[in-house]
Length: 182
Image 1 (cartoon, rainbow, N blue to C red):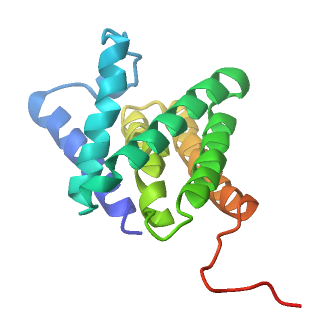
Image 2 (image 1 turned 180 degrees about the vertical axis):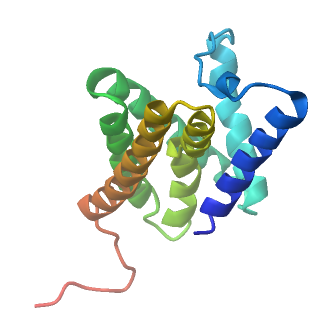
C-alpha cells in the first residue's frame, strides 16, 4: 500500500501541472523518445547507479565491484533475453540469473551478504515508471493504453518476484557450521 500513495501523488501532481499550465490531458499520452545517448554513456551510467546504491543503503565501498558486476550481468541478460523472448520473459530470466549468481557470490566468510548483492540488480529490473505511465495515460483519456501499462506493471513485478524466488531455490545457500544430516 505504501507504494500506491507515492504513485497517486505523482499522478495528481502531473494532472495539477497540466491544469495550471493549461496543457490538455491528451498531451499526457505516452510517446517514444529517440535514443540519442552514446552506448558508452549508458554503460558508464550503471557504475554511477551502483555508486549511488552504495551511498543510499550505506553499503561498504569494498562491495562496489561485485555489485557492479551483478548489475551488468542483470542488464545484459535482461537485454538479450528481451530481444529473444519478450519483455516479461526477459525480466524473469534476468531475475533468476541475478538471484542464483548472488547466492553463489555470497558464499564465504569475507563475501557480501546475498541481500546486498541482489539489491542493485533488483533495482535495474524494477519498473516504477510503468505505473506512473499507466495512470497518466488513463488520465489523458487513453483507457486501453493506460490499463495495458498497468497490466504490464503487474506482470513484470510478478516475473521479478517469481524469478528471484526460483533463482534462490536453484542455488541453495550454504550455512556455515551445519553438516548434512544422516
